[in-house]
Length: 300
Image 1: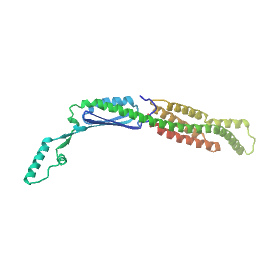
Image 2: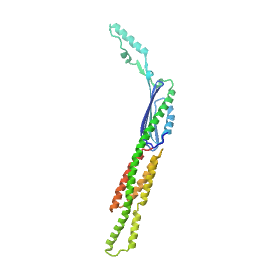
Image 3: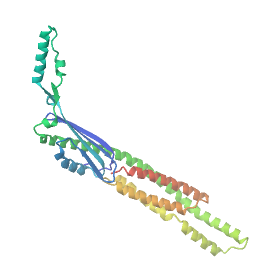
Image 4: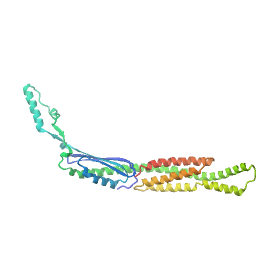
């Protein structure tokens, strides 16, 4: 079984004809937190539902999955000719032809269109519906393989798009780091100017300036948030390279990244040019995270 990263969106179908019956099985899958399986079967095939559910569970882990089975009579066995009724129609037509001295002969096509001459055979007419169980399950396996291929292809596309967004976030984080250092210097300069204004030209105590600057820098330090963002980025990149069920892990890490970015924004006043630049970059990170979360919702 292919264990590559997969999307939860896909469609597949398979068909077969056997024992005078045309079998068509369709699978449709969309995203869901868990495996939500809906099975629709023709009357008389209810006994196959447990086997169908088991085989789907063996192949799929998450997603809302619809399984629709259609079985219809096919080939010569799909219709039944009521020869006795047709003979009665022909006899009546012959009597009318003789009585009214008509030259035309009955047309076979017209006879076949007469009510009751041709009828469709229902599935209940088969001697054994159990004989169709193996072909139905074979169609299911075929459809599941096709669905798996489609979900894997969609997963590769999603993974590549997500990698590009992660690269954009990493670039923003890299740009924020030197700005954070500039912001600390700007804080110190701004604090000194404010103290000079309030003290009206009196000499400043250098120790007091250093102390106030350190307190302000501690409250606004975003180094920890940046380090956590970098760590989460590495973990996300590793998950995108893995196989199997990683959608929930992706969503959790993206929630953590969103929380770190919100804290970063709360710590960064936009009064200085470096602060304004950091705010703009952090908002771009939030935007990319939101888009990533939308994409992660569709990863198995």
